Amino acid sequence: MESIVSSRNLYIDSSADVGSGDNFTLQLGPHQLHAGDGKLLRLTLMSFDMYRNFYGVNVNNSKATLSAVTSGGTSTANLVIANKNYARLGEITETFAEQVRAALLTIAQANGSSASTATVVDPLPANTEAITATG
Image 1 (cartoon, rainbow, N blue to C red):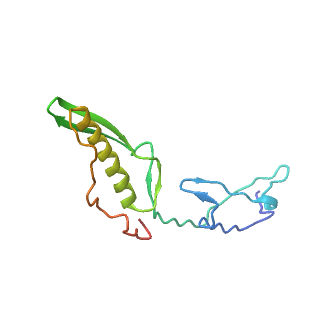
Image 2 (image 1 turned 90 degrees about the vertical axis):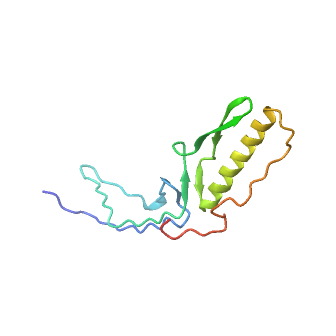
């Protein structure tokens, strides 16, 4: 027959700079949990709340292929956005827009264009727009 020998409640506030994204490590320091000889250690999660107020870009959603039709045929470029958690959707927009701008300029120059610059105009949503608490 099982009986509870000791019980502890832990309150963990993940906003207190103890983890990031889906990589979370909790250091208990001198307050480690131990099970004695012949005893079992049982952990139970009583409550969990998580607000997703960031946009995660990872290896599964960070790549795109740009195809541009030119006088010489079709040119392609592989676009890669940095893998990280972005605080605003507009940050992803700006990062992606810059990738497209640079790739199109390179393709244009490779096909005989004398263009030395290209400009992104009004990428939307703007980087200044806040994200709601639940993302």
